[in-house]
Length: 84
Length: 359
Picture 1 (tube, rainbow over the protein chains, first blue to last red):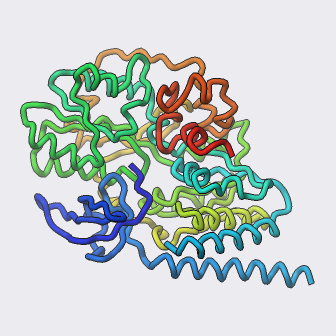
Picture 2: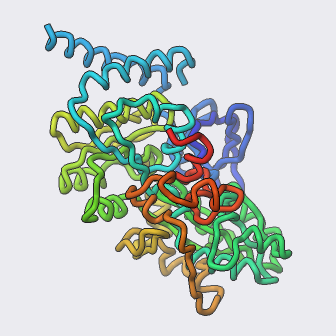
Picture 3: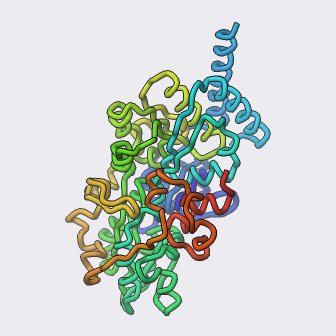
């Protein structure tokens, strides 16, 4: 029910007036309802629950990871300066 | 996702930083059962500094779906004129006398679907039968369940209905924090619930109960990130809401998904299995969509529920006991022969302990 992994939109189509997409999850392709992510386009990544995209990823994980690394470094720096 | 090597490097650095800033023990509840599984599957729970105690929360929709609704599902699914559709996890959840899996074994038409839109198509293709979907879940599955009803109305598919068991996270947090024996000092909020609903509902909770709350994702580095933000707030005595899952969660959530939910559902009191009634903690179909409410469509008569006397899943869902403190754990109760829903679900704490060991 809770597919935690992001999937990549391969194709967008309409069925009975509903915005749908073929979404690839590591090689497994599923039909996903895209009604709540009107801004999502082919090649975008979306988070899907029960066949419904609830969120489009705003940036790649690499960028968030880098920001996070910086934060950890800041903590370490701060701790070092407190110790000295 | 960062490469495995980069991830483990990141996690090692974060763990080192974490153990430096910790000055005392803290209890953190991860609300979401998916995160309970992720912590154990990745071994992270065993790598955390011993000052941190994780308390497993009630964020497992299969686990908290009330016994009465499971019994109603069994009764509806047993009817000859019904095709009963459900997420796979619900099939083995024990009711008072039976479960959906047994209904199917006895010849009932019970089908596993991956989304309610699939159930709607089944209804469309079988106009001479009633197709019922077991609409369980938190805020994450609510848009999906809601859109199936909207589309049923648009397409005039009148032989589709939903047995609704929707629950919401914030009222459960209030219930946990107001309990006399509460030990929870902070929360990792479920990332995907917040992807739909945003962060707004959490600020009043953080303020009222003085608990830091961190919106957290599901990758190992997300989990550690969530823990670190939470510990920093705990150690600094700040009771705020932080977002450690920014790539997915917008501050106000997904407005379009919220509109779909609000068009179809209205708030209601809801029974949580093992916990009891929590005021305004659920969603039910509103008057415009009452035609699609399976509870109104099928009169299933008086349901008398009977819960296992041995199972302690209620205490586990409230974070008061750990699965391995149950005398039936792994002996009388296993995923193949579950006494309670927490042993069934891929988000249940007992199933996580059974599958990945106890540390």
